[in-house]
Length: 273
Image (cartoon, rainbow, N blue to C red; front, side, top):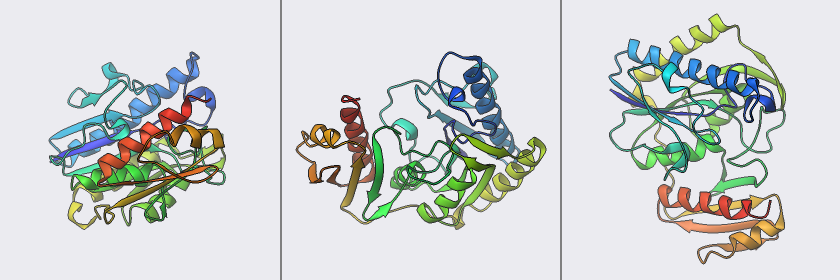
């Protein structure tokens, strides 16, 4: 069995402060260690349940957060930026399932830890064929394009609620309960380990029961920005149609095309910050 893991940092156990997610401080290094530790915890359980191959894609910020020398030596790591499929780089039809670890809730989630969708200063709301999604739902759609089900999502309790709507009845691990955007009650570590033991075992031993996220073609994406000037930048692409002062729309033939164009729009909009 071959498993794909996309790992973000905001939803990692113990990560709550802005100092934890970027910068030069020792707090960011600690968070990177916690991220590596949690990914190792998942991989240990995967191997225990008969998985033969694991590929981990570092999916936060500069995408070089996981400390490779501390990573399980039997795991492959995709590290660095830019990457063609960003948070889902490396996914293809050879994987039996995918897991999203360290994830956070979508933009606008009340009291969600670091709530945002790809870029906290740019994306206000993202909908695909009328369904509002965050990073979990969008990335599950990309996995679904290759016939790969997302079987487990871990992060704060708000994102584990989100994925039940965005993906379906899959396994989740809530590593912390949110109190505010920068505050959470973290699980005791021993309970965290037990939660992963149970969730991973269920996920890899029942892959056929989990939904593969799909949408009917054409895919229609609507992207609401935080600033109207961002629409002006996005509207320079011929595929894009302006809906109002903060929202654009485009059609895509498949999730990969949609994903790449969405990321291009975010990059264009970032030029006005």
